[in-house]
Length: 545
Image (cartoon, rainbow, N blue to C red; front, side, top):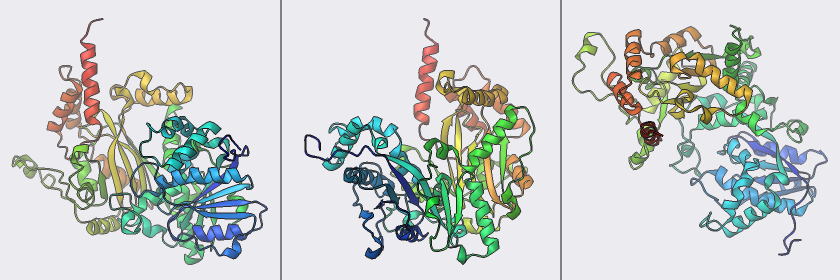
């Protein structure tokens, strides 16, 4: 007991398994199986889904305890179970540690939670924020009980002193997995506990849960054919090569495969995605100066494979838009000052207009050019277009960075899962930054970054670099389609002349490029701050010291 009569936190570090997966995938069935199994562990179970756990009382032995957390939000957006989980998780872990009677903790997270956000709760860096969160001034309106918990965690040295994340497990429904890739549904359309303001999609969340897991359980395999199962396994292995893959019916797996594995490592999990591994392999291949052919993956027997598209020439915004606007449901970034314009409807229901015709496009018509107006079709039309498209029809996942001719200052982030494609502003290209802002001090990492910058010559690390994962992908056809979106030789000469113009500041160059190459994509958030920083740098260069 401490001076206030509160039990001290346990000095024993409890290992934790985090169960993720959509509602109906079989998390609860798996939990019931764990509780029935004689594994010799005293397990505390924390349930975070709103629905009833439905674990029969007869299953709860004296060596297990089952708690159901209430919803208390520390901060962040309304309706996000991950956020409510963080607050409740801290309280429950403190309570369980004070009991000092358990060997293991299992958290059944909500079907709409992103495991990476939950896992970050266990990161040692959380302790560094305890000071601010636990102070009344730093957390106005914070629940008194939560503030007390945070203060005690801080005094104990942070969460990692008594609980560690041991294993992340994602349960996948074999019967519905492909359907969830082939949908434009928002989570809010399937779950009553998700607010309409939450713009996350079913396909994006499923991919997030698969890519972050240490162990993936492909459940309900008795409901799919052997051929379907083979293709599902191939796809999962492409999305997450490092994860251990288990097959099950009714959640029956060896409990030893998902508890006390010591598989979890946050940095490895964040960098272990299949697409990122592909990019890393390609980078190493080029650094060594060898044209190495990637070994044939074992998943290729089902024709699920990955393809890396890499080019140093920028995309023409209009041609890129014309490629994707009617084959993917686009989620596009809008500036902060457009928040009042029903952002969700504009992004998802076709109110985005790529080109505003000014009546002076006769040259395009004479050349047999593209249509003047490229309006986003309704979602059901887009879904049908994608299904029928010979190249994009079986494209499950793609992710990487893209380079727009009109935005030479920043990379664009490209992330596609099923029919959903998110295109938004990403990092500044390293070649636009002072060396000290991107060098890490790690020789290997810095060598790779410097190689990327040098490889691009005059234009540095600016490039297209996107990994595509799909079944039966026609690599050559996809490559040709993307190449047709790049600037032509003549256009690239104009682009280079503008970029080399020493009389223009960066912002003026970007405006000039927009005059050359029509760009109807929404502005990227943070560009105003970027322009302010550039203006300050220009002023600074004009001073004599």
